[in-house]
Image (cartoon, rainbow, N blue to C red; front, side, top):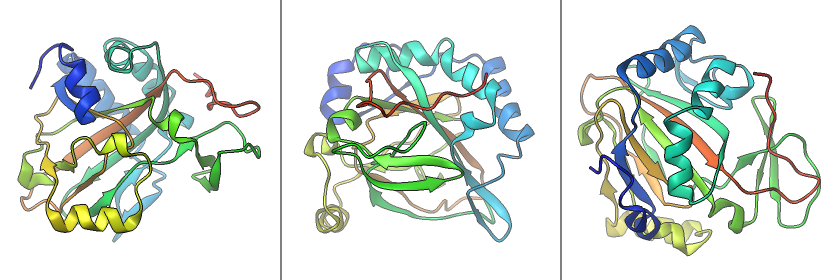
Length: 240
């Protein structure tokens, strides 16, 4: 683990980097309290009435948006991106007993926008949790940095993220190639301690296994970007 952003070259080469978040214990507690107060929820995903994921959190959690815009997270994301960025999307994952799952290898190809508009290169429109989603051109995805903030210890046996190093440089990858990567065992696990951040590019191929221990694994996944979308598309604007 690196404790300062002194390995940006490795991040750009491999597509991920485990680093210290710089968040104080009080800041981590406040983030957890914000999520708990929301119930994590009005969930978009649940199993057996147990919430395990909630998306587009900024739309209803202004406190979380402020935390994402402030130090140290926005500076960390900006340094990795190589340009000033702003938070664009937040998703919460809560893997635990009663809500345990396997996530197949995939890429994160979708962004959120303020409103739908037909623009060349923006495809696969959908509405999720009341927010328009779209797959943008690869050039936009290549400039997004995601910070996965671990609120609990996440050893490999607790469903730690598994990634295919360097795969973010391959553009959009078809399902057949994803299956080949899975069968070839090209992934590496990214265990993390509570308070650590796994920074990654959304085009990085990643997935996770079920947790094999009776422990909670909460991860707040925040995406940042400094790019301007093609007019008239705009990033979401939330009430703070």
